[in-house]
Amino acid sequence: MISPGLPISRKGLHVAPRPSERHKPSGVSGIGNRRVCFCFLALAAACAAAPLLAQAPVQTTDRARVLGKQLMCTCGCGDTAGSCSHPGAAFSGPCEVAKAKLKEVEERMSRGESDSAILQAFVQEYGESALAAPPARGFNWFAYTFPALAFAFGLALVLMILRQWRQRIVVAPASGPGVSAAMLEHARRQIERDVPED
Figure 1 (cartoon, rainbow, N blue to C red):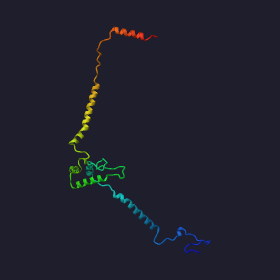
Figure 2 (cartoon, rainbow, N blue to C red):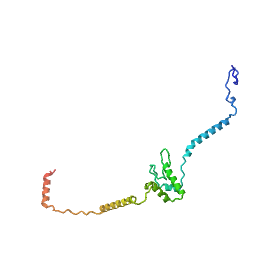
Figure 3 (cartoon, rainbow, N blue to C red):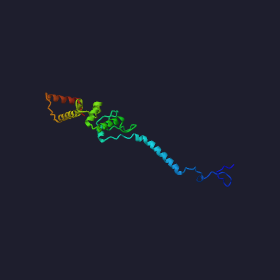
Figure 4 (spheres, rainbow, N blue to C red):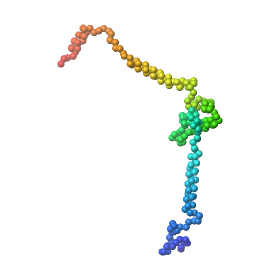
């Protein structure tokens, strides 16, 4: 039985068509396949890039970042809000707490508040622990001056010890009864008796 559409060889066998002889469906060409493939790849790239674009870093002004470096980040990193970055973590960059503080600083700046007023507002809301460098008053004053006082005390102590070491100690002759000639003679005789001569 002969199938319609397949060529027959000289020996009467059915032969598959060569690639150049195959029938292409109407409306689909090599250029059309390339366009579909390109559109699919462009769509896949756009879908892959969407999460990265959604996590774009918050743009803050230099003034807000400088002021943010005077405020502590309360996420537990121990850094300031202006320089909070979590290197090596699941994400790298400022945490949500730091972003919120910087955003609040930006909003207050846009309302025309001064730097000292913004810092005072954070102190009223969070206490003095919100500041990276607490003001020098009360116990904080002692904390600021103690290192300098300890250094001065240590330096004075070292200088005093060095001065004592450098002073010449005068060796005084031993006072007491002298050794008599009779005692020396007695000691020599005893040595001669105890030590045999060779």
